[in-house]
Length: 215
Image (cartoon, rainbow, N blue to C red; front, side):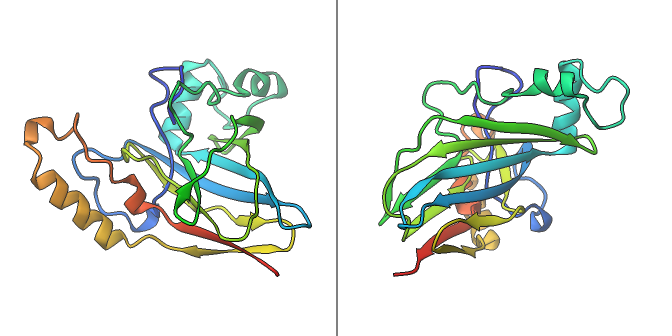
């Protein structure tokens, strides 16, 4: 995720971490477990998407240390510390879309700005939740969580929930095909430029969530 808190954040979302082979050319750098909730009213109209990000243990430790939190090292924060952490990843830079893509009939839809829904720390792992407003019919929506640059790997490990008269199906990413794509694109990139010109392959690692509603 890209925020104004550089160097803390660069970008986040979309790969099944448990089956990932060793990173290619030092990618990805940050790992985020993701949960999604598509909020739909009783008429089948979407109101928005709630996104939860749980950061990996190293990144969580680095952030807590840099912010001077959890000084007793128990992996939890007291209420005062949580207030200080609230919204830490909501200061997005211009042009950053939030690593959550929603499409309908192949057309990307515009999500509203992030609205924080809270932050927690459990066993040293930071989880933040935010809401993105969206309007229109929910049936046929396709949701993906990914960082185009694959700097951050998003694992859709949490539940995918849908409210209202709708449900969701999840199509796992074809990781073999994704890594083949990476290798093919990197093969065509000079080694000295591979890190700075890493191909935008993040979507290839993203699971596909499709929303269906009762007629």
